[in-house]
Length: 424
Image 1 (cartoon, rainbow, N blue to C red):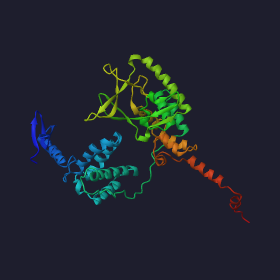
Image 2 (image 1 turned 45 degrees about the vertical axis):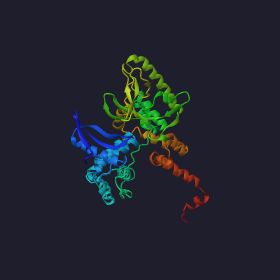
Image 3 (image 1 turned 45 degrees about the horizontal axis):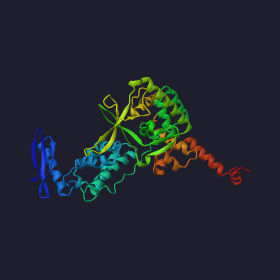
């Protein structure tokens, strides 16, 4: 493509091409920073093709599905999805989709080939049905956007793609905590105030793990007994500034106000009093944090990072995180790692997670007669179906209670007389 000119500037190459004049002046598009002439040439061709299509991303029939998947992650996922979701999608792409489909051209993949792929994956692996659904979701999403959003293909071959029928025994990873287990856990860690208070906070509110460990004392109104759920914490690759970031809740409806029960309110007040004492005790050695804005290439703030304060940043506004170590050290959700190793191995409570406190809360509070709409609002669910399908479990006791309740409801003299079945 002769319109694209490649030149070398210092140790790097740049591409340059002319575009339509504006105001009688000749205009050019150029970009530098490429390590090889070939990289600059390929990027220049893509940019020039996109320019010819009035800014619509390039339409290249030779584009591999593998390269398109990278393009989709960078251009769609990173602009529309949460970090943890992006990470999950990238794992699915690299482990399962690229090895089987990545080598083919995007425009040549048919619905037949996609159906073969999803069948092969289901036959090869023993995942839960929900994980297979995630793989399907990524495939369908990539082809939907290739067709409708970017115009790379004329029709969507994944439009009717679905999972095959599978005889998969449903594995329920949820653990419903009993009162005995809760007491045993709290007693075992009775000297670890940070863990027990975070455990009680989740236990009595049903908050997500990331929401619990994103709490600051500004979010907790001890006078009026409310918690304002505004944020969630997540981790990325660690560097010199740490690895913890604070962002919005999982969904818009995730922002909510939760009323604090009397027991939890008492616990939080006592915990706050002890934290204030520890700040005085440690004095200048107590560790404080602030939020550092992370901006994208356009200068827009895309996330905030939790950074430890130093002498140089002492004037930054302090973020008063709730669940930290005695000296103020913040470890995010890692606070739960060691305790749950002990819970699994020493206490013998298998296959339970900190997150399961959320489902336990939903199940138990619903069994008290609370309306499911109220439970959904407390959990931050827009749809009650989410609450019903994913966070409420039945137990042997609840099923037995339901059976006896129905028995009492349907009692009658006629049924009692008939069911005697006397031998004459």
